[in-house]
Length: 310
Image (tube, rainbow, N blue to C red; front, side, top):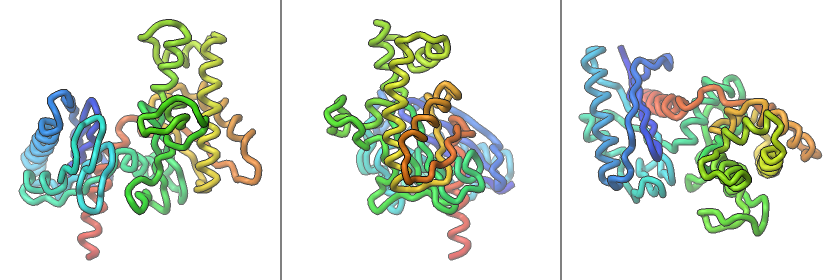
């Protein structure tokens, strides 16, 4: 059976799969990234994991994987196959595509950005299926975005397209890791809500999920924290939709798991802010934490299609 290897590398864990031509997950596996061991050890772990998947596929299906797709965080030069920089993983200018292809006996490898890969999967086979223009926004540790256009995701001229988490929505607000103040992700990410809720209740272990539950139960402290985050998020999203005019806005990540607790006030807040703009459908992501891995698989299949057409 023809298949590809898919790897989604995160700051704490890696997800991997063998993916069939129809997008079916033939085999899945997970393991820790072990970033505490340093960037060289992380890269070695990625190579070992990919080699393990390669061996499983060869044994199970009688033929090696036709290609591999790998999605990684940080700054990614997809054309050159280089993982330029990742704060959480500590690497700089890692030639991952070349290293993986060598380890996998010459198998062609596609390297992509984790959020754009997740957006590719959501756009083609998830919540954006059948939509020509979408914006995928995962609300997790930070906030990023993937701009979907006719079945592909726009990387931008320098690989930074979609970084809406660094739109300044509250000038002079909290300091962001990027160096600015008041960035969207400092106010409306799952991490930001966790920090605000922990401070409100005086419990350092309290997190965004706890806050969402408290909102649902009517806790006024939680409602205040949640309203602040939703207002900031709506401000940032309206800026994004003004620039991009998507037909569908797909919200994923940890905060999206709150479902109506997030989506009902967010839709209302966005509707209040638009004037001439066309408000897109605002929907939850459909693929959960498998989106990045499925997207990596799609990158691999796209690479094979490009090679065939060439």
